[in-house]
Length: 409
Image (cartoon, rainbow, N blue to C red; front, side, top):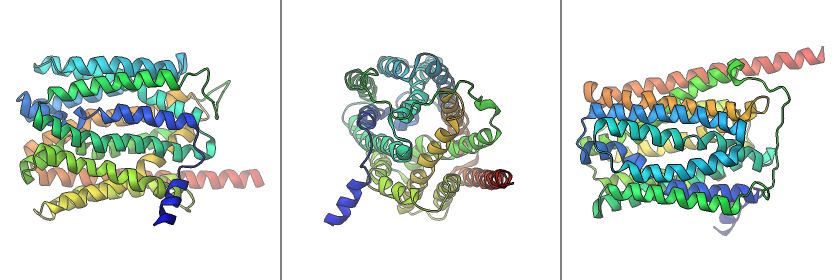
């Protein structure tokens, strides 16, 4: 056991101090984002919106995310990642607090759009900061550490959120969200001063390539958008499914969602360390993650036993652990030849686009076609994503082989 623990700790060695601070800031921020997994329930139960209205609110969520990711990429290339991150975190805190005071459909749509517009300018800036503060050989593990922080916060957030809803009300979630964003901002200003932080991988291109002309990257983003549509069902449709079909209450839902973050915190870093040294390519691993995530929905239709929810969560968690770090790393590698902000903005936008269609489609299909048919359709989307990734992997392999032959000749 002692040796196992020592080996676990060794997987974290070599990461820069700035990456650890960035992870802590992310942890504080994500621990407070407990509104997000409960947002569809809040709109349906507390504000008494119809499922159709909830779907359109979640579409506004996605539109704001797309606009924010695009804007964040532009601003990152113009004023730098640090300024974008600080301003985004601080403004998001105040917007989350204000969001609880909106109660009509139109105002909620506008409010959610504005919150996500501001909040998601943070994402491309954070990816560029992560790349700058990390040695090239540590990029995947640095990404994984940030994801651990996100998921540790996410594992605590829903569980605490369920307790807050049970003991107080939904409004308390908005206060916690806002305050934690403000705290994360103050910590970042204190510990990540750009004049003192150590830059380990500063990439400068006099003539950067446009991400919009990188066809392989654009195909990859299509696959990621499809994967996002599948994955995001766990943040909207699935929570209502847990309540309507399996009669789970908010606390039980929070604990089940928290299981995802807890497992990622314990197992992801050793898994990534092992996979880094394996023969598998990054796209091959993302392919495997997409397949597992699709299966996590398919098995929900096999039995009415509530224990299948845990099995589904386990499959999705492993799929997520494999897919996200290596898709992030693939995107960062491609970004080295172009405008980093633009590349990482497009990567973020692929998931933002998934927010536009994923939540709405899942909720609308579950209302009109039933949950069983919805999970079948989601499974098909996951396997389409996997097929695209497999074809792209083969294409890049052939291209690399042909390039090597040309150099030899």
